Length: 286
Image 1: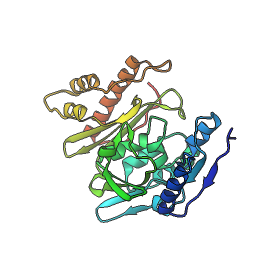
Image 2: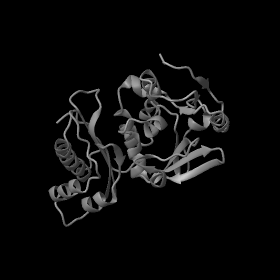
Image 3: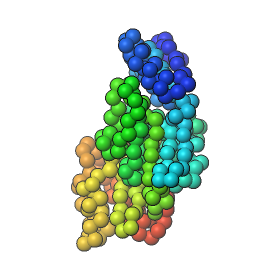
């Protein structure tokens, strides 16, 4: 399957995984954490995975937590998207997880794998951006706790050898009104064109986007526009489109202009759904 040999390790704890990484890195083996391994399998087949040692953390107990505490819902990075999609504790995250890939792939793809992966859609991060969640990581120095906005800039900014353990979300966010609309390319199982997720806190709307740029994002400027009560929905959306980050994706499958058209109409749908109290919708093409 792979055009090169590598060492495979399955540590019994997060601490052991971090120590393994440090040792293997010192030996010049360019170790890589694997959780699910879908991308590593694909990249390995195409000779894009440059490592001599793989550390599989999918069964590390600290990464498999799913706990509803007094103030937070704590979710392990090694839980599969299928496991997450079957939970009722965080409906928006459940909806986002169900929209990634197909059923067979979701059994292999983990939450951490989706958030940290090379595939730029990373839809599973959108609910955590919207809810100002916290990220718990582990490196050779110990456990670190970060606000997600401090460590997620286009992708999760982990230091060399730092491992994603858990994501913590305040329970007050879990059952807010939400919308999660995915527009697919023309077939039910293909990659999405655009995903827009949103929540409503009192009368304030928060939005996060995937598929518009080569990274997922949440924009304070766009939210300021969308919450301007002096504007109509159409005016809000037109102004929001003008403040999308650059670059807008532009390829043979979908031009930037068409993508903006899709974002415009999807954003109108999102705002209308939240205004009318609907919860979630998926669209397979426009």
